[in-house]
Length: 270
Image (cartoon, rainbow, N blue to C red; front, side, top):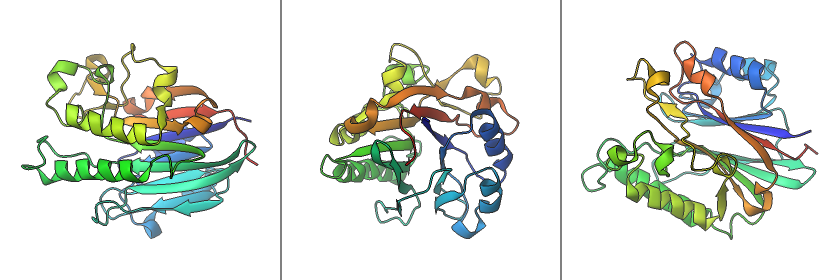
């Protein structure tokens, strides 16, 4: 049976728990990686999620801000977290699962958004973002990612011109500036990682996963960005058979401004 992995910036888990339930009812991913859970570990709604079938939880929470979690129907062989930039933020959690194609390590990241001004000398938030990406690049090299690894999350960068609604207009807007794109490409090359979403949906096609709350008619305006990603190392990338941006979730009542992305993996739990 294939394993389905999903990534979703839920933008606060507790008020949107019913959205997780709806998504689970519609797509039932085996592993769901959430970003911006905005809750400390002991207040995470574990009991409700276990009722949905997610019996295995890896949580790296934080009060009011940030926080990541991995929900799984498949047991974890190991769980790890890593800090970045000495900020104390909860922006990473990883698990390893055992499968018929060997162990697979899954990283869940929430990269800093970076504020409004794309200049590290004028904007500490942007400096934090760029430093975070540098640390990712230095860590996730070929020496670290020697086996089957998957990296998902809200990376807060839309790298390709068809990952944004207007390439020229957004070149000076945080999330699509050349410096950020170069930094993200350097992280990808260090793995080396493959962008498996774009392996299946070529860059000739516009593709978004985030639409601003400022646009009331967000779907028709369609001024989106692809900030959410699924990558895989060469050892496992060819096992990804299908990907989907679940755009419907952005249209639910009081939604996250992000839509989930799913990847179906030709592997079975061991």
